[in-house]
Length: 225
Image (tube, rainbow, N blue to C red; front, side):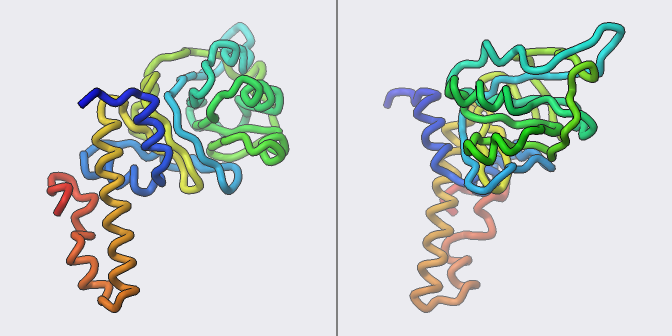
């Protein structure tokens, strides 16, 4: 059997909810759920390889935000670590417009964004810790591009798959992407069978026992239990 390509794996992951992906990561004992980062609007969904960016407070020289956007490939999801700061933004309306024009897959910010009306109007996929109008210019500087980030105990490396929906964002290490997809698909199938069994007359307890609900995401258990 040929090895699945990153594009094919991304398509499989994109078809799955982050809840199932998070459960699959739990089963493998892998961190991946970005706590405290949520979608700016409903119906936000994206999955693509991470393009990582880190900011730091300015030093003696000033700083700016956003110039890295010229180098982000189409389909990538920009992951920005601003150390969780909520007092200044690192993404705004100009960047949203450029990202849309260039086919960038979305943006995830450990921090805040502004000009959110542009996100609402265009549907650009955006996840952040919140929104705030004050600029990051002369407050933050670009510290690193395409280097590993660690956000809330989750490591994000360039090329890892970033999957976001209405519930939030999960990071899937590229080397585990196929296994995560397979486990998450099994979880989705089992949960659908549980609902069907209850509709057909079974009790919830019996249906959950039959389809191994309580072990679906438990680390170290059989995937088909």
